[in-house]
Length: 317
Length: 317
Image (cartoon, rainbow over all chains, first blue to last red):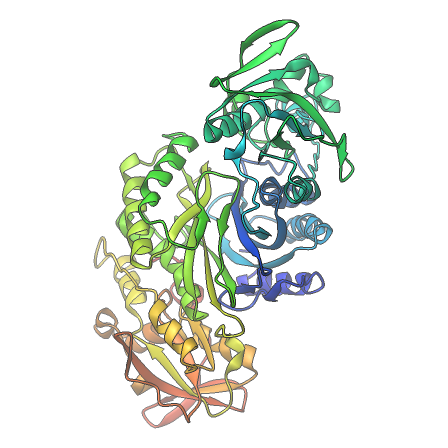
């Protein structure tokens, strides 16, 4: 490694001291971090890999973008539970060939997003990498006891909603793999404030974040809830880059790494058009009959879950 | 990958259902796990890499041993805080070339240790590896509020103790790298029950686990506590394999991955000879003067922190 683990930890410690959040009793520098979960709340925990050559390529994205997306993967899971993030833990392995400036810029992207959501980088691990940049992010947050948004709460008749727009990461990936562009950063925003509203105001019956693609993530809700779903193709909000593609609908349906929220709510609940400034779009309805279907130009056909990994070959964005 | 992520997750879920622990409200299968931290307690969190070619080699150790040691790295950090483990999260990337049986046996080793310590594998991530087996373990535990054992609590005059014996992993690594043996498993036991006693009975003033070698981990206590230390070489408990080496003392002083606890206690406290069945050995004393020294055969010389990575070339055990 071009710098010792100790130096990297010292760097982490310097950089994160300024972002100390109230729930972190003890951050980097001991065997464990110590976190205070507020009374009446439970801890929510998620871990996500960001592996070079699998989840990103250094030649396609700036280091800031790789760092931002690394933390986004974890924060988006917290958002999908209706949780509030408290602390992140980063395990980072770097090959000796990576310039120090790359690592500095990676942290800049990751910590910029951490500051925005007031969470502290409270620990982690460092190692020399046997090949490529290897990052694993753990995010710990909290949610009011018994109020976590689950995948299993959808009921027949519930309406289906998404935040923001879909297909941006997949559209850009298509341009990159096709050689149409050489580099492009996409900075998805984890929908923390939306998730908090969905949970605290009792709006959502089920929720998941769209990391593997709408079709795949909807299938998880259907499986866990024991229901089916019908989606209206015309209602799906398609991102700017995806709209320019001939495969716009496929990108929005099956492209991954959008990090928008997919949620269901009872028909009786009035869901606002915007929550925390983010557009909310109704796209379909939960059915008692199992299986997913897509309505398009007056015809209904089965909707197959063909997520990210099956969509466009290598799972690299 | 030789099996899809979904299959791996299904396997995780089946295998861990039987080990469900009381504090895990929601385990594998949603965006996050939900954990209940007992009232009056704080959460303790640690993450640790186990990378093929860096922390282990498949030709040197059985898959069960690699899995056991992967979780030991995390549990040992919980022990060093005086904590009780609650749940583990495993991010695991596997190359397509790894046989399914290897993965099954890896889980067998990891989950056997989890059952022993009554913690649940509550989540994680899976991916195809760009090279080698890549594992990152996160362990979440809890400790009574304000009672976590820190590295920073050692005071001049405190006595220094270690659990068990030192140098076993380093001695075996020396035999493996020297070609004296072809394979050898070492199964270190994380000292959870000892750590709990040290914390709850108010015995220890500071603690750390010996993962990087006694000299390096003692230097962390000295740095964080703003003190120095003197160690009596004759008192250091040396493991069976290390005793056969001509470099026995070096192996015990600087060899890593012992996962014993190193702790300090006031001179006024009577420290038992055994805690939770584990031998406790006094090896030295904390000094007000900075720096570490080693007493050996009547002579005192500086003790340099030259941990694992500097000790024997590649950091592979």
